[in-house]
Image 1 (tube, rainbow, N blue to C red):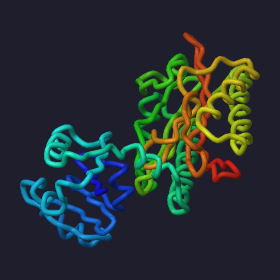
Image 2 (cartoon, helix red, strand yellow; image 1 turned 60 degrees about the vertical axis):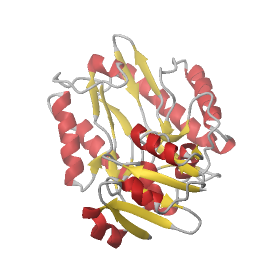
Image 3 (cartoon, one colour; image 1 turned 90 degrees about the horizontal axis):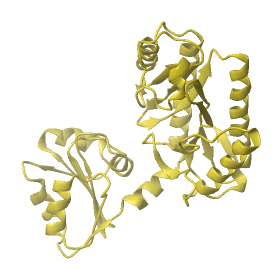
Length: 317
């Protein structure tokens, strides 16, 4: 089977993972014999320098260039999740045997290597440093605090992994509150991550807590620690989710309206899924653990770390 990936206007995780490069409007064709990168003519010289494989430029009709490489009788694997509809239509008409390989590509990416882990450790460490600095000495408003997070990130040579979630007071009771012009008050919740060399982190911390809030926050940390300790006894995301529900019950807290965490890497949300029905393997993967609790009309708290499981031991990055 031959297969093709496409990198359009935006960064595509599968394309980058399989090609090792990030060049817009490019096609990656892979078979047992060849690795071919089709790029716009203007990116030809750049691609030849950074891509480990064959580079072929195309002009206005990339489908004609693809047709010169692939036989119509061959089975063509496509990343259905990210392939634009118009490209899928063209390819499926020309190649009658097409199959969706998006799931296997995502599963392959979930297994992290040493280089990937090294980058993600640095991203997590930087995120914690930036979040702690902003949380201990916040700006006057949620928006200004969010702005400071972003400025600190670029000053450190990184990029934001996603738009910061900075909420305080009543706004913390909304899981994904957008920063407002409201003055910062307690509790203050910061959910943020940095992006280094295309890999992401996702960390959440709470600050300015009352005595009651500190006790509940400690329970969330205890849930997190218990999950990390017991991960070696688990195999799937579903098992982890069920463990989390049991721990919430033990601590006398209501389970949040979202999962206990999510896979993370080249995408902020990727495999493994940590939903109750997930059969995704945890071995070799990086994922967040984010125990949270929300009290309607009052406040919410969340504590989030990135975790790696090598099959024997789970480690917080």
